Amino acid sequence: MVARKVLKQAGKGLGSVPARYQNIKVAYVAKPWAIKAQFHPAEYKTIAVQHKVRPEQLLTLPVVCSEALEPNQIRKLQQRLQQLGYPIKISGQYDSATQQTLIQFQKDQQIAMGALTGETLRKLGLF
Image (cartoon, rainbow, N blue to C red; front, side, top):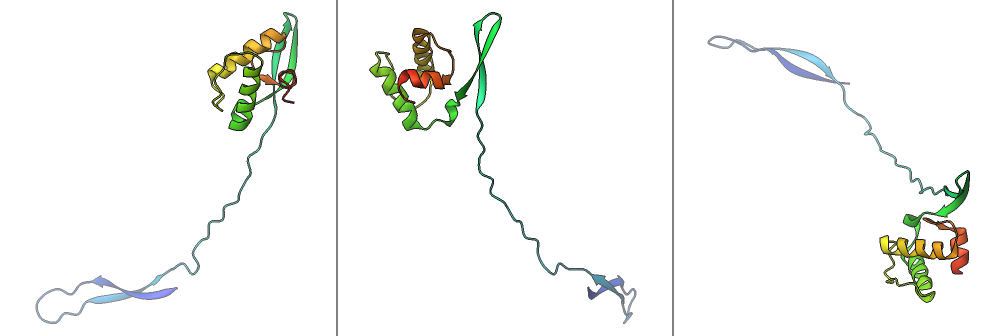
């Protein structure tokens, strides 16, 4: 704590009327705060989608998240689809054209459609 003089009442009138002061205590920060941040790496998990085999039976399969794919992995997928005769532009982006071509491949192979599954990768020869 540090003591400091503060004006309590100013002097009034003509001549030399002294002002009155009082001492007050002022607190100060001896050590500033430190902000510490911790790095948390990204966490990934496999999600499962359900595929209707028959009206009364659902099949749960693990799938690859298309957002987690790198451009070179998507290019390999597109190149393989192109090699198999599917009309697709090799862009390195998992766009709607790539998804529609993949679904057509899955329909032709009679496998689970709509997502990039392990079975699809095996049929493409990529896994």
